[in-house]
Length: 461
Image (cartoon, rainbow, N blue to C red; front, top):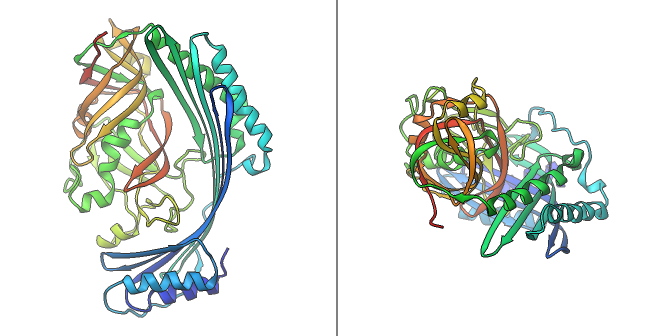
């Protein structure tokens, strides 16, 4: 997108008035989004976003400027603005842009930009039809398709030069069932760092049926009981809890600002010895996977908690410089408009050795969570409240009646320390993680786990 000579000139200008590090993030992003609502295709949007962000670091200070015009003149102007905002002593920097080490690309079997828009529209319309056919009580269905092809060039004053293409595809179904005064919803999402092969094997139809059947099932579900009880979280529930109640507290900026309960606890036990927490950007096809992060650092697998012991945090270049260590490849940004910050990629609790069915059988009474809903988390202390989208009572070691309206209330670090059983399965969910006003694609995963005691909130019917 931009010649290396021009990148080198821009970085030279960026460091002209001080600062000890500069980088440029050039982006060309093509998007397609299709929405079906009220039984008709409401919108088909395609877009192209192009621009570049230039950053100058002076010690712990960051100056950032961006432009959506990639001419040499506009890039130079943005570099001058970032340069004037920088503080500190002018430092001699030798620019020697060279290729970063080779990282194999993720396999894309069918590029979404080679698929006709009509085929994508038909996929959405078919999912809408299938969801509505599940039951006459399905009164509303929302379906959305999206793909993103993001080309980036990243260069910095330390010699990093990276070219990359990220392709992501996703599909979401939301079904609403109505009976009398009861209104229930079912939500399912599928996506990855993957092409149109995501939809092989009728994946969208399965997604639509699952969402609609859950909405219908909840119409007859009993109100959830309230109180402290054992909670088994199925692997298919995904790793929302580990992402929200634990992952954010392991991002290095929160640690360095003392805004995390994990600050100062490196090397100490912070979870049960059956718990290992990993952030892994290298997993093929997962929604949060990266060849390189948005600073040009190769994506990595970072063991954060190893059998209960806190081992590491997630770093970008700025936070790693503060501790004179290497970045873990977690520097991410929503677009060229934004400066990078430490973010998760694919965060998971590693599978254990126990059969998930055994975990159910050895739980006398409690709640089985098969699908997590939304929630709120205090990242400073780890307190959380999550909705349960699909839950069942466990009675005498057997899966019992479905319940609705359940919530889970607790503290992430405390929950990690009392998990006593970890299954051998692993289930992923996808999402857009919000932090500092920026959203980035992530996935979370966990095996079936048992929490011996957790506060479950119920409803009055």
